[in-house]
Image (cartoon, rainbow, N blue to C red):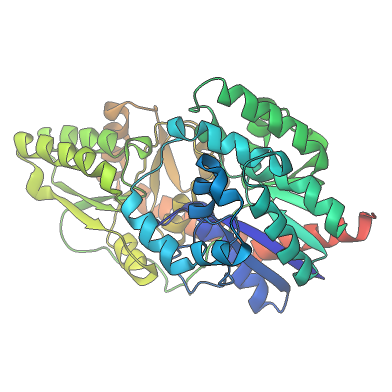
Amino acid sequence: MRVVYLAAGAGGMYCGSCLRDNRLAATLIAQGRDIILVPLYTPLRTDEAPVATGRIYYGGINVFLQQWSRLFRLMPTFMDRILNAPALIRRVARGAGGTRPETLGALTTSVLRGAHGAQRKELDNLVAGLGDLKPDLINLPNLMFLGVAEPLKTALRVPVLCTLSGEDVFIDRLPQPYRAEVIQLIRRHAAHVDGFIAVTRYYSERAVEHFGLPADRMHYVPMGVQVQPSTGERPPHEGPFTIGYLARICPDKGLHTLAQAFAILRQAGRKCRLRVAGYLARGERPYLQSILDNAQVAGIADSIEVVGEVDREGKLRFLRSLDVLSVPATYPEAKGFYVLEALACGVPVVQPRQGSYPELIEQTGGGLLCDPDRPQSIADALARLMDDPSMREALGRRGQTAVAEEFTADIMADRTWALYERFVQETRY
């Protein structure tokens, strides 16, 4: 059985979906499974060895140019291949900064229209390219790509699944009338998808309610991370109590809220420091600077360290330097991959009581919940862990054990492949 897994690149940044997709494909390949990871929009950026193919479909440059100019819709195929070159897309993505959903309504709608959108040529190239690969099943990356489901099924006559990735946050910020049209198109094209894969039960229910997806075609396959060999209890690190943040540095992920909670702790005379790691887009630099400026005014800037982006080894070193991790996202997070990464290293978490976080903490027992968007509530939870080392260690050990037993990459791969086999065996065209 051969599976083609389409994965949407996120420009020049690390993203939880890309990390999960690459780890899933890499694990399946290591298990001897026949899976091909195919990037869309941009190359996948991961902190592990990439396993995606070199050819990119629906390249970000072509998609954008074809949206705004009929001339580019008529270009010969060899020109499309030139504009889809990974090196060129990487260079353009680095200079483009962050993309905001408010500006992408027309483009999102057009891609969802599939054969009736401005990117018809990209769709034809995808159908032809995947046809050459002769898959037995195709996995789409998100709901915004459902416009290709029917053409792929018609041409290749194979089951089509779709992984859910927290699309509601992006789609709900689209201006009208685009938001309503996108949701309508998703509901229409969902009829051509054989099954949907959610990585948390929270988002499975959310997608059914919000997008009208069929509940009987929803399947839950939990995320999985690489688990390092256990070395017993994690030794305490030297220095003050260390709070960590590991995510994209932007308002959505709530670094400003964590910084305010940190200020509350410091103003109460507590000895602690804050370490920040994650991707910083050019457009978000003023946001980070405002946080650092406020810390300077409060006299605590010397206790905040911005580590920046980290690769796999750098991430492990970063996590092992922490007493606790907190990423107080301001929206209901669908995944929370970093929660599992922290727990895999024995680091407990403090997260808002919304989205997938209550589910992950209940399943792992590895952290505390706090009120969303309330710095004082975060500070109170952090203070509890600071004052009770035995609780902190117990949460870390419990979380680490739960991840090793239920949230490993091998478990994720086994459950995903079993689902694929079921659809290939049961679906006939």
